[in-house]
Length: 104
Image 1: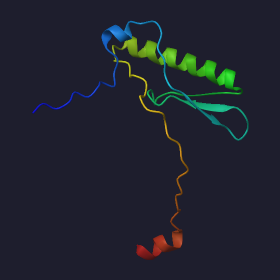
Image 2 (image 1 turned 90 degrees about the horizontal axis):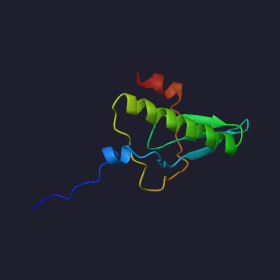
Image 3 (image 1 turned 30 degrees about the vertical axis):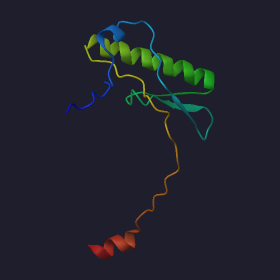
């Protein structure tokens, strides 16, 4: 029985030769104003801008620079994520220092 082939999460050489790529970006509003931008397929990128337009421009430049650097280093480009990102609030309880000391 053959196992199904999983699609690669990296671009092929032919795909890398293209001049245009598309990546999903996530805008996170910042408390002081503006937006932080992350690129799930390229986790090394974190960018920001004072407006959505500026954040988008900065993200585009960061992606372009990252791909250029990867190309110079002969590193295979990551494909964009295939599924919509999911966001949720996760409650995390901080362990009190008193209970921590009692266990030690």
